[in-house]
Amino acid sequence: MRNDYVEAVRSVIGLIPAAHVLSYADVAEILSSGGPRQVGAVLSRHGDGLPWWRVVRAGGEPPRGHGQRAWAHYLSEGTPVSGEPDDDGAGYRVRIGAARWFPSETDWTVFESLRTALGARGQELSAGRDEVEA
Image 1 (cartoon, rainbow, N blue to C red):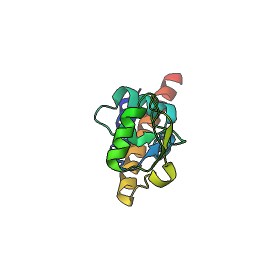
Image 2 (cartoon, rainbow, N blue to C red):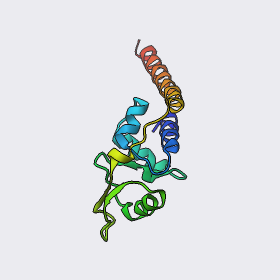
Image 3 (cartoon, rainbow, N blue to C red):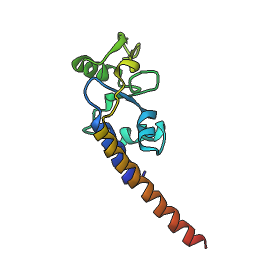
């Protein structure tokens, strides 16, 4: 996975404030790059030090296999949830409609620079490929 993409995803997730969430797809859409699976892969491999629990599945479910750990974070931050965790940590959802983060204008400026950097890198790679193919 490209380092610039990893760092862009990490930057977006690092900005999500306490008690708020984005879906994996929201993060990909903000960056105009990748998709939910790519965002999940970044979190899985490079999520150390990030508030990983603030990125949920589209239906508000916590990250797979991390429901119990995420629950503790949601409670401590006051994240709106419905239901209670079962023995496996499933059985509840973040109320994504109430908890979704809506970035500020300043945040969008940061996102725009991340998108531009990712787009420029993609254009450089395409240009190099075109030169090789010519």
